[in-house]
Image (cartoon, rainbow, N blue to C red; front, top):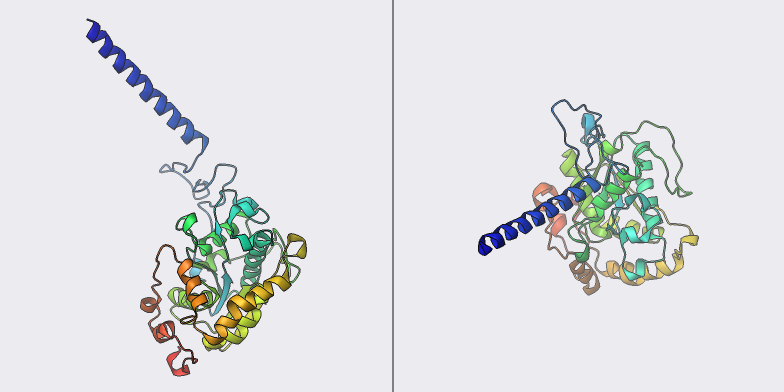
Length: 330
């Protein structure tokens, strides 16, 4: 009888523990809604909680789909926003000002990087709004091992969604970019990501391949958005190494009040990037450039572009130091 009572008591305690775990799981699920169940009669305008909670939803069932009306596939103008960081927080609504939302290296902290990123995203959207024949690409790979396999390109796209930037509104407007308000925008349907680039040169080169994947052709002209201190390198080295016939650089910096120091950044650019790329235009031989690419590829990703952009195979494999022949570039 004593053994039977002990067994019943053990089963009762086990059952109570199971009920407690179930209740705890229910509490977690009800406190942090992730997905809204869709029944058979759900309309197109019903919200789906793909991210965040009910008060922080930024993707809906009626969101503008990519390549709507083949608007992306018909593009002739490539607009690139080069990535510089990866999201690490769910508080994406604060991405314009809060450094804790981003994974920042020591040299990136207290220099207005959140404001810079927002300015670059806004500038890219602004240019895309002005040209309906453009494709906007947020470029940047899975560069930080500590963050998990999150890419810079997809992080920028999520920020544009979360802050509702697609219609041209300015969460943090740079003075150099004209404001366009209340304009019907198709930019979201003409925006994609490139998620393999590990440096500025690859931002440019790989985004051209990404353009080809979407459109089946190569761009007639290319616009690049980044910091102003990178302008010399893009215009005199990267664009020339790729033999681009029409290239425009748009520099966007945060105000000095954010801690951004243009002089200091320009000197770091000169030593760490401009001078190495001058002797190694394709980034194949310089120890410092090769080290950067290795450190920024913690997940050992291999770009697919030799397969998807076969006309660019020679260019993708070219290491110089001499500039590639024009006959080898599409």
